[in-house]
Length: 543
Image (cartoon, rainbow, N blue to C red; front, top):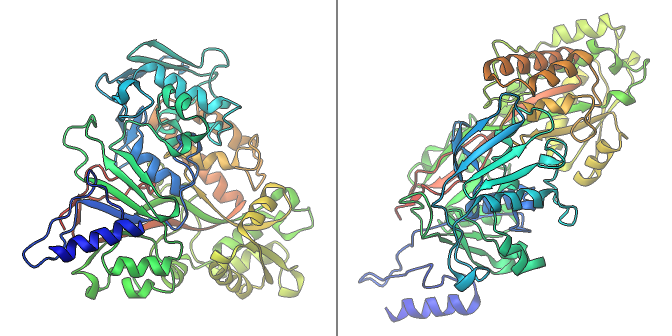
C-alpha cells in the first residue's frame, strides 16, 4: 500500500497523471497493484485551442466541445434527427418559422458565474443569446455563416416564453435542422460570457454529459461526469482524460501499452502492425483490441479550376476530364495506399453514408483505361506528345495518392508533374484561383447532401466552389432542393444534381473516406458515426 501511495504522490507532484479525488479513485488489492479507474483516456495530436463553441471549427475542438455542450437537436448513429434541448419542433407551412418546445429540466453545469455557483435551468433566452452571439461581429465567430445569409435580419431569434424558441428565416432552407446539430449551435448562458470575458474559451459552461475539471495546458485536460445531466443514468464514465502527444508513433506505443483507451486512424509506419492488407484487425491483436470501421462523410477528389482552363486547354473538353476519371483504379488505390480503409468513389460527389447516396441510381466512373484512351482520341489527343503536361498541386500528406494517380494518367498518355506545397499555401492558392489542378477533400459541415452539393453552386464563392463550376440547370435544381420540404423529393433533386457533376466532371473522384477506430477490449458501447464524432455518454470501461 505504501508503494502505491508513493507512486500517487510522485504523479501529482510532476503533473504527469493529475487525478483529483473527485475525479479519480485509486484502490489497491492485496498485491498492492493499482486498479484502473472508470476514466476514458484518448489523445489529440492537434492541441485543443478553445472550448468556446463559437470557435468549434476543427475536429480537435469539436470533440471536447461536444462532451461539454448540447444543441437543440442531435443525431443518432444513423444520422436521424433526435430531440436534445428541444423536446419537439414544428415548421410553418411557408418554411420560414421553426418553433422549438424546450425541455424544462436541463441545468447548466455548476459554475461561479451563477449565484452561489449553483446550476441554473436552461431557458429560451439562453438559445437566443447563443445564436445571436454567432452573428456578433465583435465575437467574429468562424461559424457565423450558419445563420448570416439565412435568418431574418430583424427577428431572427425569439424567446416566446421560457420554454418556446423560434427561428425566422429569410427564405426556406430545408437542411436547417441538420445544420443546427453542429457544435457552433451549442447553447451557453449569458452569465458565463459576462463573467469570464476574454477567458471564456478556457471556462466553458454547458449542459452536456461532462464538465471541465482541469486544463493543464499541453500536459492534458480532464473532464468530470456531470451529476445533473438530464439523461438518467448517463454518462456511465466518471470522467475523460485527454492528452496531447503530438507524435502519432509515440501515441501509438502508449496505446499498445493500454495507457490510452482509444486510437483513431492509421499511418504507414504502423498500419500493418494493426490491420491486414484487406483492412481487418490482425488476429494477434484481437485479444487486446477492437477495430471499428464506419463510413465518414468525406469525399476525396482532385479539383479542376474551370475559370483557369482556356478554350485551347485539354481540360476544357469534358471528354478529357471524363477520361482522367476512367483511368483510375480506385479499388487498388484503397487496397495499396489506404490499407483497405475507404470506399472507391464509383458514384457521385455525395459520399457513402448519406441517404442520397445510391450507386445504382447515381452511376459514376469505374476503372476503364480503354474507354479513357478512346475519349482522349475523340478529343483529339492521340499521343502523349500532343498533350501538354498537367501539374497537380498537393501537400505532403497526400503525395503517395497523387503519385499513384499520376502514374495511371501517364499510362493513358497524359504527362503529369506533381508540385508539393504546404497545406495552408495550397488552400490559399485554391481560394485565390491560382492553380488549375489541386488535391482536395470535402468533409460534411453538417450531415446533409446539401453540404456537398453547395460546393458546385455557381453563386457560391471559394470556398466552397473551388472549381468555379457554373451550370444553369444545376443551379436551378439546387435552388429547388433547399426549399423542398418533402425528403423523398429532395433526395431525387440531390441525385439529379450529383449526376450532372458526374457528367461534367469538374472533379476527379477518388474515394469516400472511412473512420478506423481502435479501442481497448475493456471499452464497451462505443459506436462509430458518419460525422466522426466521439460520443462517450454511453461508454463503459470495464477495466
